[in-house]
Length: 590
Image 1 (cartoon, one colour):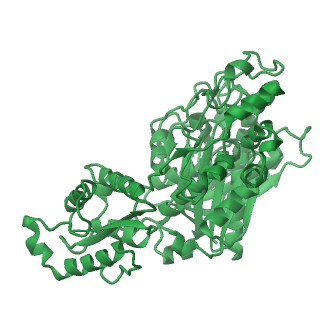
Image 2 (image 1 turned 90 degrees about the vertical axis):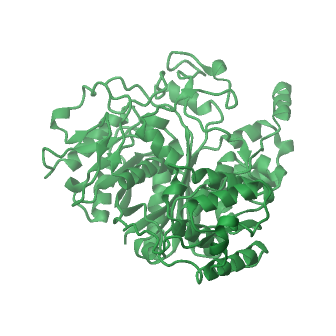
Image 3 (image 1 turned 30 degrees about the vertical axis):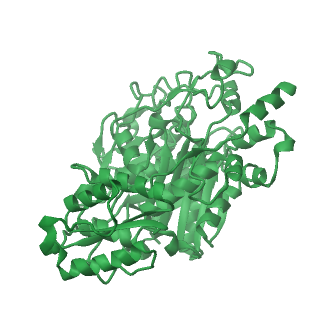
């Protein structure tokens, strides 16, 4: 069974959402920077020499902004509970909403369904901070918000009333790839009808930095230099990624937008195929890749792109040798397999590293392009590059062609010796149909849980209608279909009836300036349009909608509407964090 990727929600260093992430990748940006003061005091734990007891050799990382902020009111979470919730849970909630919105799956569609949740997660730094705060401050919210990592998946299932399996996976840095693999298995077996496959990682304490530095795993310059002669370790990073997955046939029947298709997957373990538990193994990695290709029903020579684990450590040599052994047979000499690593852009997101790689690969397949791999200047001398059918790109490369859909795979490993591989391909192209009736009026709805949120939604939507922005490129029919039939309908709401993008933008401006809802588009130049029977019918439905009634837009909507990219919900963020003053007091007393 083929699995469709129908929605993406993500937050990575320097990017919120798939569009910003793709722009970052295309521009070849390196998002590493010095550890910010709101994470920990890097000066206190820094020493330039790897292995210095109690010290880290790197001052850098890749970080997400505003991790202390959360829209608690939107998810009906009290301020007290929000402060005790691991920010990984909070960011998962918002990213999962973004992903469901991107997939056109409002809560009314998914509540009570056999939708599963699989979350890859390996760190719990917020619990470490809470633990240092002392046991007197611990309560039920500490237990559900931080102590039990199982609550990361359970929180999503509860928030959206999802009744399928709900599991948090810790397979170290392979965690989120294993989560995607298990989600696909659940869908294929019929256990789930839809799945959220997630990964999350935040860096809040210096402990792991210090431990990794003791064994020379941290790059002093803060860069992952995959495949390069100067590779000397990785840089730690943060990330949150959520994929909405469905069986492909079901997704097509439901009119979903298919971003890419998962053909197969596999997970292996190195066992005792190496000298020590934590050493990488060619045998284990080859097994996962080979099994995934067999599961996908493809020959290795068909693979056009591999998103590697690619940390810039000794694992690179093992991984590249494993890939070469599998990809070389029957591959034309003039068609090497492109191999890259997202870690060269955003660092190693550990528990979220796999989903970051999959999201990058989905975007590559969707856009028919592989962006440049950073920090690859001198090929590693211990590899026989002339004999390897691999190309690490230092510039953008086209992916796929008119007569061949591109095939890609994503590899990942964990220090627990777990290996995982996901195989994907491009979705079938969708014919672009313009609106059948020029000048036909359409109804567009916008909503939020409260008036302040609604104003933010309207401002965001208005910005998308500017020349060159995504909203202006979509047909009004598709915008109307997406907002009325594929988005959540909250309590604070407004509806606009318009026959053009300009009229819609004018109505939004009037509303934001304090105009009366329901009387849009009826200026002096619009008398004839205002008398139109369809416009009157749409306005009647719009009035009922704004009065809080449940309405059916399908009867008055133009047929053929498609789900399209529109601005995601603009979160109303407030700070929620532990009582740091008490933490510092307890530290001093200790």
